[in-house]
Length: 179
Image (cartoon, rainbow, N blue to C red; front, side, top):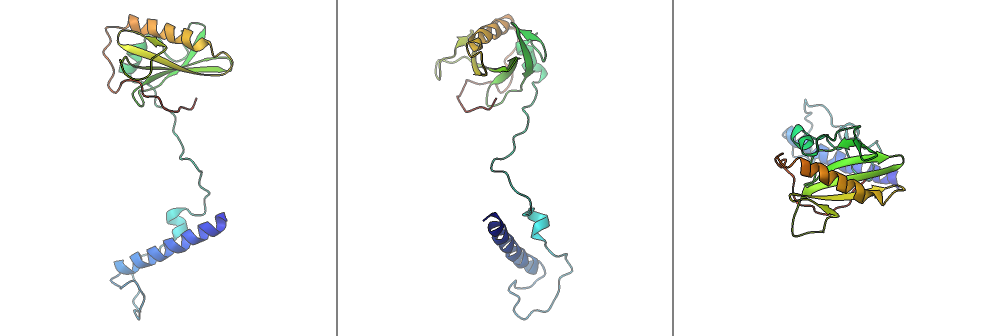
C-alpha cells in the first residue's frame, strides 16, 4: 500500500513538474507537436520531494529551549542540577505557551512545575502566590510529591517579588504535555 501510494505521488509530482517545466520553457505544457528542448535541468521528484524516505506520522518535536536570564531570575537560585527540597532541578525551560517550566527529577519520578500568572479565571492552581500560580504534572512512582514541590517553588517565587514578570508569561491554559 505504501509503495503504491508513493508511486502515485511520484506520478502526480512528475506530471506537475512537467507542466511547470514546459511552461517555464515557453511551451504549452501539453507537448502537442513542440520539439523544443529547454536548457533547464530535468526535474526529479525523488530528489525534490524525497518520496523514497519513509515519513513519520507525527512531526518531530525539538527539545525545549533553555530559559533566558530574565526567566531564570524569576526562580533564582534554582538552576540546572541544583536541589529543590530533596529533588534535583534538571532544567528550567523557556516560556512556552505562556508558562515557565521547571523540570525536577528524583530517581525514576519526574515532575514538571509550570509557573503562570495568577488569575481569577481558568483552572484553580494547586499553589498560588500574589502574582503567580504554580501547576504541576507528575510521572513516576511518587505522585504525592508534586504539591510539595509546587509549594517549595512558590516560596522561591515569593522571595523574588522584586523580579519583573518575564515577557510572554501569561495565565495558565491547560493543554496536553509530554514529559
